[in-house]
Image (cartoon, rainbow, N blue to C red; front, side):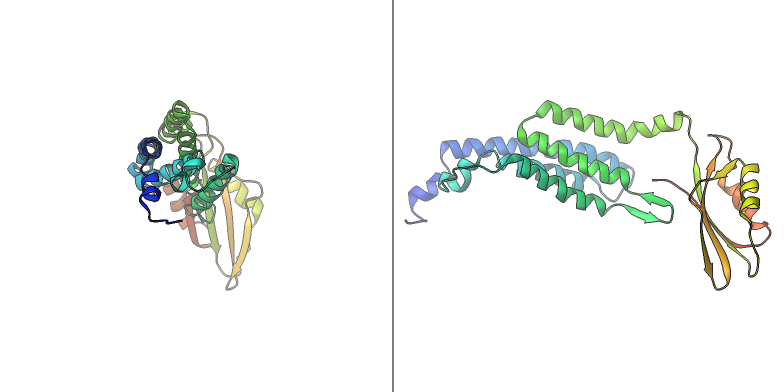
Length: 249
């Protein structure tokens, strides 16, 4: 068989082949637009993964999904594919691969974990692309809107609802100073905080005890502000160094 014959090459430009490519092309454009919409919120807030990342994830997910639906047009329709690929396995591969991408944006610094929302939204972007690829356009548009709404306005809802803010605290005490947990808990309670159960870890550096723990406010507006806590820790007996940060994820 002559693989560069006119008949072989023209098979790639048959009317059916071109029509299928146009359908795929329109799906990819739609997936790109939806992915960019989700990514704009992340880009607006200065996150590492922006519009390009979301657009690429959504478009690639749609591409991989949609080509699995046209196996009889592969290779110009000359591959003689008798049994098409299992779409569920294709989707499983996409979700698994995007999961590794999402894990790359999750960062942990002590009790502070960041990037979870970005990772979840990247995973959601792949699902949008899959929906576009299988032809569920209204569902893809709805998921796009729900994802954007969740990232833009759910945080405002969280601020309105009752909550208990938490602060991650690291205290390094002076040499030979022996801190007591009961005293620490009482002092924290007087300032509107309670030490989270199971968050305490103790380390010794150069003969100096170092305590790591999370202080959870007793109510939304009951805990002392971080600058006030920092000022008090400066004068706290036995404390040599300290570090405060919001324990968020």
